[in-house]
Length: 169
Ligand SMILES: CC(C)(COP(=O)(O)OP(=O)(O)OC[C@H]1O[C@@H](n2cnc3c(N)ncnc32)[C@H](O)[C@@H]1OP(=O)(O)O)[C@@H](O)C(=O)NCCC(=O)NCCS
Image (spheres, rainbow, N blue to C red):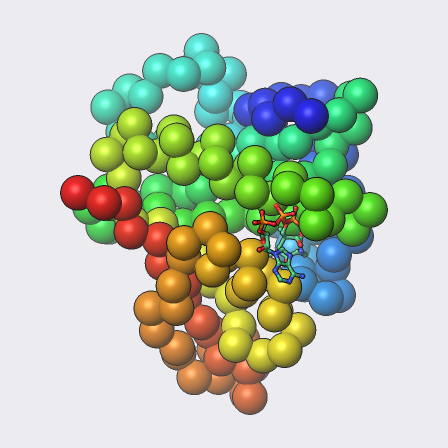
């Protein structure tokens, strides 16, 4: 499997990986939001000629690809009002490919990239309820820790759990 920056040829495969988890981890309206985010990131990277940073942190979305098929995706978005802080975005592995190390490989590519950009902290948003046990275990295995709980954020009775990964100074 290769970890690649998302390009137009990966777009629909990456959206499909979000779509298969909709209803469980993503709201149905997030399918369109994911496509719009991915298109924006692809356009931005093409405009920047791939890797120019223009002095400003850029969002990034990578895909795990095998034989031309997108098996998973993960991205980050800079927190514009914070110093060297980022939020993970659209983290998903196709159900047929889960538990095979793809999520970890996607994270390791982004972690390496963020470290080179002097990232200080990365946040990811989830919930403490049982339906998120798999992603919480996943984030904890990568070194993320629950930083705070915001009551009733997602809906009454479903809190926001913000997990944070700290880069060592
Ligand atoms: C969460 C998710 C991205 C993990 O991707 P994955 O490819 O299945 O994870 P990996 O195989 O790379 O596992 C990495 C680590 O996570 C942990 N992990 C993964 N699934 C786990 C599970 N069901 N129970 C316990 N630990 C688990 C393991 O400790 C594993 O560590 P290892 O590498 O030492 O074995 C994937 O399960 C997924 O797409 N889930 C649905 C969408 C989702 O929840 N997105 C996040 C929304 S907040």
